[in-house]
Image (cartoon, rainbow, N blue to C red; front, side):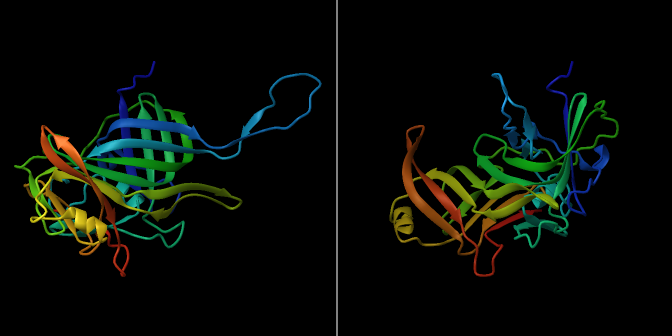
Length: 316
């Protein structure tokens, strides 16, 4: 009997695409929640055989891969200038990682090749007595910073099908290296700046929206990120038009900037930014929060002419 709540996920960045990086309990354990795995996905083709009687023909799998999605708390490593445990996942979602004490910075990249080093991960998922290995994994990630909750990320990863084996769930030497997350609140979260205005905020979300595809060709099997279209949403208390006219900003497709900082203690401060003139506002709608009029606005993150700069995540 296998128990659902006995689970473990290990993630390690690959040096060579699709080659098992052999993550370990001591270094590569990631604290996750709300895990869902599709251990065997792919396409099937049914044999087209004429028979002298009724009945199904055999179906044969012609592509095989696996997917897993899970949540990770948005918190630092606990030590400024030290990469967080989810760093390998962000890199497998198309971000570069630059460690320059006291900061760790993530910005999006455009892959130059399927086999570009350091852009994929080996993922071990263990559910009680069964171990699933995903190789060459890449994916996408979204962020959720909502008041009265713990901020989180949701990763959706696709990987080449590795082994599926009986494996005793071993927790010996298990080390999680991350700070304890703090609630989104006026105390812990610096007021967001959006188009130069600091509103009272209810929630902010950002979806990197990578276009992730599994490709199987003769001579090549891979998971690729073929594009990204980052989008988001923010809910704020409605200001007077004289204070900030978001309707006019949306009508005129005016671009501005966004900056949000969460956390107070070194090693557990996360800052999310757009490019300086890279944030578009989509048609604001009215919403309600305990009888107070709110604006619910879509966000579009746009790169500058330099490219690969529409999102910047800094941990200090």
